[in-house]
Length: 378
Image (tube, rainbow, N blue to C red; front, side, top):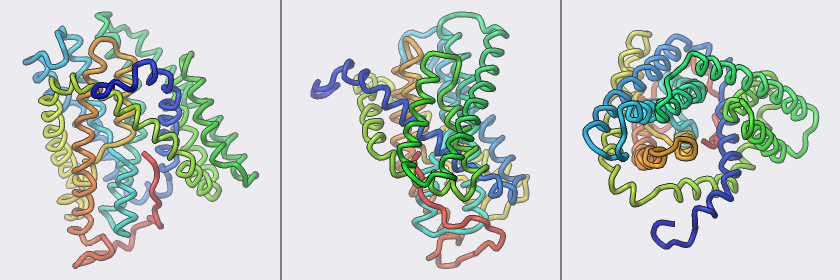
């Protein structure tokens, strides 16, 4: 739309429902990858690194981006509450990682071991946490951006929305899981229908679409662990055509005119996030008693960003008035860089730690419980 002028804003708005379906499939995948039996073996490092990333990266990136946005008019003429709102949204997205990239590299290299399992577990946990965190921060940021005071009632409404969304998602997961377990037909149609129902529920009520799908995927994966293989296969089979539209819409939202003004904060975002990931992985991994390979190389598995980050950027662009499009452009530009760096660094970490199948000095981990991980969409 910004170079050739073929597509228009009306064209992209007409296709936004496909964006919601794609976000639902992403959230279903996040919930479906969360297997409780996998998490128990390394619970202490998983919780320590997840907590450090969630709080530490959010605070560090938000703080630095607040200073950056205050020193220049990158996102327009913003007052202090709006700067704080934009920085908080960037801080939340900085926490996100790409589970699809993580699993795909593991599968390609046939990796097994402590680093593999710990990074994969933290990635899945962070996907679940980021959806909850984004719901809360987005509500607060919207109040700040509109100049309205943050009231306790707003926080209460957000908490209620989270609880209701998880309950509805759990119910849909029970119904869908029961169908998958008993009827071995039409699984791809079922997962698309589940995403559509969730999107409709979240369109005009106090229900969070992403949380509904996340809870549904979690229930299906853990209540029916054997039948859930068909569920994950159906997600992969049904998502490709929808993701084509989704990523095209994301690309259409990358305003080249805005990008020329926001490339500097995007670069700062990438560098600060990379440093925070390095420090906030080594520190909790050491405290939790992880092995030297995890302490030294584990941070490389948390660089890549893809679908979830882009989905959240699309929501910011759509729901935050004024500077939402500029914030989304910063995120999209940063995600492009992180997705180029992430797979390369993660593959290097698995080779250097000896957990890739063809590593020169393999170090198999007998405690690993990962069995044939398969790539999932992000």
